[in-house]
Amino acid sequence: MLDIVRFAIGFALLGYAAYSDIRERAVYSAVWLAMATAGYILAVYEFSSNVYALLTFAGAAVVFYQWYMDNIRNTVKMAIYFLSFILVVGGMVFGFADHATWLGLATYAVTVLCIGLYRKGVIKGRADARAIMAIAALHPAYPAIEQIMTLSPLARSVAEVTMPFALLTLFYAAVSALSVPVYLGIRNAARGDVGWPEMFVGYRLPLRRIPGRHVWLMERVEGDDVVLYLKPVSVEDVWEEVARLEAKGVKRAWVQPKVPFVVFILVGYTLAFFVGYPLAFTTS
Image (tube, rainbow, N blue to C red; front, side):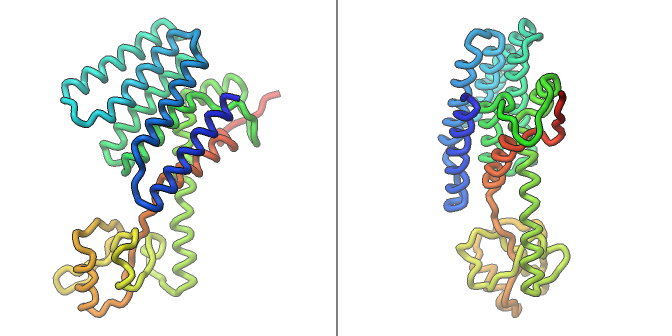
């Protein structure tokens, strides 16, 4: 029943986040706060008799919530990180043999990892990083529902620590995101817009339809040449860039769609819940 409750909360909030990101290209921070808080409350309910596990989950929660404190000093942030580390270490020292404690450690590790990947630019959007962190809090363990493939008890315990549910969601999200270049390639080929590799990165759009669209302009005028960028950057004045392209005789320009990754996280979340671990095996 807890698995169903967790999935209902996660799917509803991720669905809203995906809808908001598509419509407004923004997701309210309250969505991730609500998801993670629900996860930590459920963890307290599920592991209420396991003090050591609760210590590790408390360490993960401290790191998660501090990321919303943008106006605090770096020394305070370091103190908060140190406190979270002490909580996790304390839980692990005394509850090393307990699986629930390891689940809290995995939640903490995913939370810290997401912050690091975001700061290094590997995860581009802050909402994407917070989504994975919130999923880690909501689903510290794999669901008990057996679908398609199952894990032996030992393999499942190992997988939950080495490949937590949140990272499994990220894996499926990354795989599902590969559908975008495939779709773009088929669409461009059908329209006769062939070019390598830009036909798998974007599509051509009449210049006057570009401003106001959720796209990045892939073509820019530099000097006397029209230059194509496979990794476009935002421009301050799209109309000005369009006018410069028109002056060069360009009728349609390559653009790259801004596809919210939260949409793929929603897909990955659903696949992770119902499909499960891709290397799962069944034991008799």
